[in-house]
Length: 324
Image 1 (tube, helix red, strand yellow):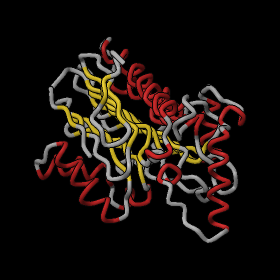
Image 2: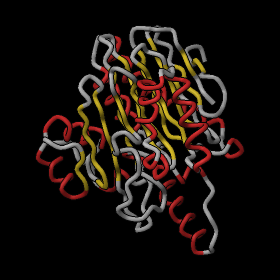
Image 3: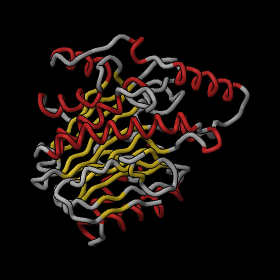
Image 4: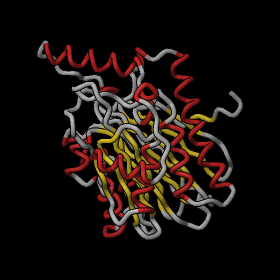
């Protein structure tokens, strides 16, 4: 499934709240409405910045922060638990104007992990910091921290118990909504600059210390003004092995493919056969947007200069809720 828009508008923002959605059969109207509302809040947070002439980097940071603050999504406040009953969060940001990037992995404490990643980019000489050293860096930078109770959600805790019980019984957890969940944003601002940001709690019952593709530059996050900005969501190990985000940019740069052709080729033709369930959101230097996925659904949204907040969950077209 791909949603694409090639109107060439001055700014463009796309977001995702993770691939591997709740099954249609288990989705209530109230919960579906809540997901759409969360996506719209994220879109609006980034739209306000872009409409005012702000940077793509500020817009994707704001959009991802809104998703991290929403317990429905697997990042920040809604992060899942490791097999040891802990939360370990990863995040990354990348500025397409100069390929500067920052990332963190295996942290829990900073209220918004995406801001921790941005601090690494802007206030250190490094790209990726992990664990307690990353936490100490965040404290020195004065980032807002939250108590463990802030990040606790009953839904995520119960998902851990169910997954552990299935493992104990020798069964495999086939629920995509527990196997992978991530949030992300990509944007083109009025000056033509691109940026990407991605944040995640990882996989339910993942091994302590496991790091997926989200903070790996070129796998789950990428931005380069000459090609595109990408944020991925899915089976992180496969996305890392195939350098998914960078592969899309490479196909555009070296094979002359359009954004949509490159994104579909990677997600549908490359990742899916390899077991890489998931999807990506991407925007190119002209403001074209592509949002392909190869699984049951992907929480996603797009906003451009016309201000319409378009969102979708399953394989339906993007929905405009202005008059809903």
